[in-house]
Structure formats: structure tokens, C-alpha cells
Image (cartoon, rainbow over all chains, first blue to last red):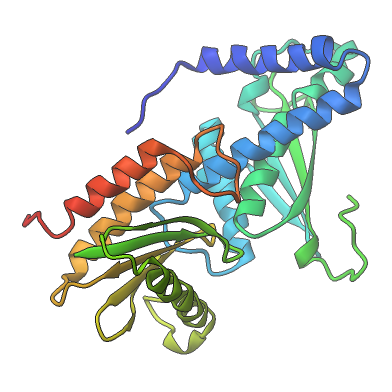
Length: 177
Length: 142
């Protein structure tokens, strides 16, 4: 069992990371900030996938790797599993988390949609890094919404759309989502 | 006695090779490691040995040469660990134990933020841990 830090430390670190990149390093260049944050997430996902697949037997196919992301990997990161997984059987997967933990303490101001999306690049990078380390290069993007009459008011629903080029039947696919 | 351990990435690029003998046949050991990569690929891609051992990370004895035995281990991220030993009577459980500890050391080395994925592992801590694991190979009798 490794050493642990409190969850509020991680929350503060993530908030400060987004704030630093958006307001200081790449002020007025949100695309660059987003790309940088996603790249950090990519490396973290790469390393975490090594750690969390350590005790397991190898995956027999891509679907098992994706199920691993939805269940074990998601539990390690966000303390719960994915609530819904959809696929079009042509390489695109939609993962839905009804109560995304890393946004649990954010207020639900409507004007903050752009700012809110900045916080999604890091988890997307983590997922992309983990999957590409497991042999599935993909493009990942995420979206949040507030389901009105849902079980958990004041929580965010995160939908992650993932497109794995190797699984899609389009020979000329370039990862367009 | 373990003469060589190696970590090879998923594109068959060497990430770490360390030999533990004083004799300067390091080139021969590198060659043995290189040949064993083919055996690993063949073992993994050949489905004729289907069954409970298909998806195991520990691949077992890859091939014996006249002086050495070569064991392999393939992680989920397609990183291969190769172990070359001159021991004649090696217990399976010892080798599995070795690979388990080696895998833990590898994961810690890769989690280093200064490590560039795909490049060689240059961490001294990793080298020390590996030499500790090599020294205690086969000694425990539990």
C-alpha cells in the first residue's frame, strides 16, 4: 500500500493547475493551455495504467481493456465505476459518469461553461494516456451536463466520448469525433 | 545465479539491460535477450496454447541454451521483462516471485515524472532495487 494524500489536496492541485495554465502561463490562449493540460494528463494516465494493471492478467482484447477503464481504473481515480457505457460498434464509445467526483465541489453557475470545460482536459488526457499505453490509441473528449431531476442534484454528469481509430471500420479515419 | 535482467518496451526497444557477471560477455547476453524477444512474440501471438495460461503475465521458460535459462514476463502494457540465469534447478515459484518484485520496481521507476516513456530507465534507485532483488533470488525458503 503506497503513501496517500488527502483528497482535498488533489482537488486544490487540480484547481491550481488549471488556473495557472489558463491565467498565467497561457493567458488569452485557451487552446494552448488546454493542450498542455491534456498532455500532462496523458503522461499521468500512461503511468497510472502501468500501476493499476500490475496485478492483473493480460487483456485478451480491446473490449476488456475498455471495461477495465470503465470499472477498475475509474474506481481507482474517481472512487466509483462508470454508470453507462455505449458504443456504436464502430470504434466510438461513450462513457457516462452521473456524479463526476472531480467536479463535485464546483458551483453550478451557468456562465462558467467555458471555464468548466477547462477542468475536463486533465481527465480526458488521463484516459487517453491509459488507453494508448494499453495499445488502443484514441481521441477523447468530454462534456458535462446537469441532469435536472436526477438522483443527485447539484452533481455533474460527465460524458466522455472516445474514438479508437484501430477499432473503427473507416480506413481513412483520422480520429475525428 | 542470475546473469542478466532486461526490460524491453513494446516496440522492442531496450529500456534497461543489466548484467551481473564480471566476465565481459555482455554482448552475448544482449544477443540472448534479443533472441528471446522473438520467442515472446511467438508465444503471445500463437493461440495454439490456449487455456488458462493464455493471458498470464508470466510466460515461463522461454528457451534453454547450453549454459543459460531464459525466462519471460509480459505486462499488460506490452513491456517485456527477460531474466537470464545459469542456475540448473530453478523453482517456478522463485521466478514468479522475482518477476512480481521486478514489476513493482519497474512501475515505481516509470512513475517518476522525470522518466521519459520510451527512453531508457536511468534511475539509480531502480538499479539498486533490481540488484537487491537479484541478490535475494532463490534465497528465501518460505
